[in-house]
Length: 437
Ligand code: ADP
Ligand code: ASP
Ligand code: MG
Image (cartoon, rainbow, N blue to C red; front, top):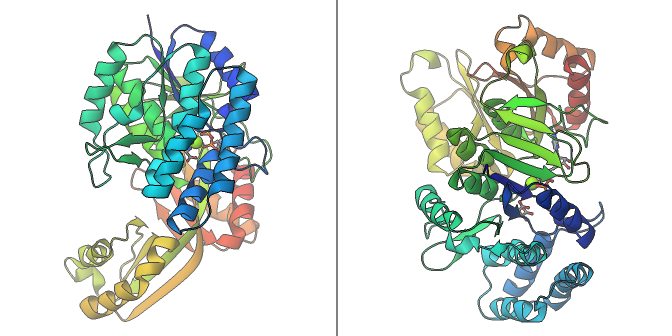
């Protein structure tokens, strides 16, 4: 029998009613054998995700403050789910364990992981599936780095013995028993790892939108669903801000050649988006597949005459950012200039040290630091073939009265990246959408 791995996100499991929808989807097809579950998310836009409540408990406990009201909110969320589903579950006992951790030795990742842990145990009970704890199978090194090889071996062995199971997303553990999490939204990554280890023929990622949309639905009203997209396009879009799928969820399944299908738990009749290695022939004419972006970048422009003839200049500047533990996002270069685009929050802490080192070691004539940048990626394999695409991007932005502060054509040639002022971000996305959708 084919195996499908299904991952349900926070909104898909936010309440008993949502869990019933997820269960109906799971039970509708016996190949949906392995379920990866998130913590309960928002029930409406004013609600708080259980993961955020858990982080709040940790912050209060580690600051020596009273965490009981926050823990009671978590209790209420789960109590309602348990009661409405009619499952037997000793919530008091579980919350007592969490409380004693908070009182004795609060650990941030441990706390964050409890939403997935409790929700998966409840879901497993409701479905009649085995609960497999990710702490025993998803491995991290003690320094918090993910251990892919051991994880695959352990997951493989465990899944081979199990017919139907629920695995909590987002976390794992190191050999010393300490819990570690992926970054936010990381249940998508667990889903991808489970799909590989189960040799699944399909990884279904169930969320609250009918697939990957052409652009961010919070900015543009009703963008169309991208019916088929390649792993590479998706990776570019998710990295650049299309948060529907965690950017690290693409690698494992891509390597194993397992397609991902993004689906809507509230509209299971929609086909969603298929993510595949190559586009079918009839779709190869498409120029732009999607547009994504994010705010929160800073550009560090360094100018020095004859920079282009100074061997190793680029390596030296990159070395300075690396030595200060500040990864760079993009690095467009001119003949005598180089711009390093960094995440503003990461750069802020290291700014003075980095600038001082650049001045001292590279002796530039000019350095300019500009914050408040938003980066937008226009992504599509068709950009390689379509003449004049960059001109269309700039023409569109110019017509909308938006100044382009930075340009970078990705070396894969499947994306054009532009930097605009943060306050122009929404208008830029809207105008590019109208031009390319
Ligand atoms: P889940 O909790 O199911 O993992 P997420 O909140 O992580 O769901 O991701 C789904 C959300 O991603 C959507 O509700 C939507 O607001 C947002 N999003 C941003 N960009 C896009 C896009 N291009 N396509 C679809 N959704 C997007
Ligand atoms: N619950 C975690 C978060 O809110 C992980 C996830 O939902 O994927 O980030
Ligand atoms: Mg998500």
